[in-house]
Every structure is written in C-alpha cells, then in structure tokens.
Image (cartoon, rainbow, N blue to C red; front, side, top):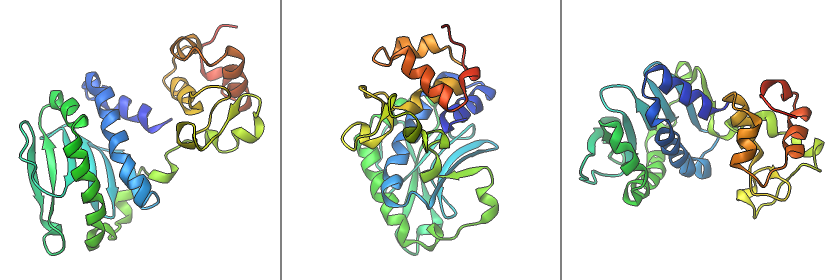
Length: 232
C-alpha cells in the first residue's frame, strides 16, 4: 500500500476524507526539500492522531485531527491571515524556528498554494540541521515510519528490467520516474489505483495514452493482476 492510500484511509477513518486531496498535496509539497537535502534521514508515517514527516526528533510537516489540522516548520512567523505560529523552543539555542499552523481544514488549500509559505519551509528545512534535535533520533518514534527515500514502492525496483516493452525511464521525463513507454504517466500511478481497488478501465480513461496491453502487462509481471477489477 502506498503512502497516499494509507493517508486517505486514515483520513476516511476520521471522517475527514473530503480533504484527502489537499492533504496528499500538502505532503507532496513537504517531501520536496527533504528529498533533496536528506532523503535517508527524513521519515514519514501515520501514528495515532497524526500523519507526519520528521527528521531526528522534530516534525517538518504534520497533519492531525486536533487541535490544529496542519503544522509546517518555518523560519519565522509570516503573519498570514488564517495561519497561526508556534515557536519551537527546542531550536531557540541554535536557529529559532517555529510551526505555521492551520486550524481549519478549509484553509489547507490556501496553504498549499502559497509560495511564501513553502519558501519559508524550504529554508527552515535547511536551518534545522544546525540544531542537534535534527540528529536526535528516538528509535521508538520510528515505529510504522518509512524513510523518505524508500517511500516509492518496491514494486518498481526491478520492473524496468522485466518489462522494457511496456515501460521506460528517462532523466528528462517526469524527473526520471519509471513511466509507461511512450507516455509521461508514472507506473506508480497504476499501482495507486490498484491499492485503492479502482477498476482498470477507470485508470485507462484517466490516462488514455496508456494502452490496456501496457497496463495488464505490467500487472502480470508484478503478480498483481488479481488485485484490480478489469475487463478484457
């Protein structure tokens, strides 16, 4: 199961599935800077009332069910309407940082689209390295978490060696992600549909550049043909 599917299921269980898309986008945005700076030292997971991205013993980004729905590390208070700010005391001796917070789910979309917010977040992701808390890993806190570098499902690891007629990889296409040959559609997208138990026809309708032969060929190779509802 992918992290997107896990996150959607977690939100649905808490009856806030209407904000699944914005929550997924929130973490996709949050993953970008740590993926460049320290992909093996950043961890993502869902635990109790929170889904969070961490480094050491510190949140970089988190979504929770109470009392605030979103937390995002930032270099300073941006004093923006609809967003709060919580200083992080553990950083005061080094580089003082804080969390931008959002209390209302309806404000999450505005946060996702705000360039100032994500620029501040990117700088804070670098500055946190100056604080020992970024290296203070507490093992028990890694329970049910995965390294950011390993979130990409292992399903794609050897696929390109098995299915060169169906897939391809090019550094200039979709940042080097494994895609269906002749398209810009990542193979991971098909696996996300599989994990969500969506029909193959729905995937093919959403991504018409992928042929049925390609999709079924990939599923056959990874032994997942039985996990998706498709019509031959």
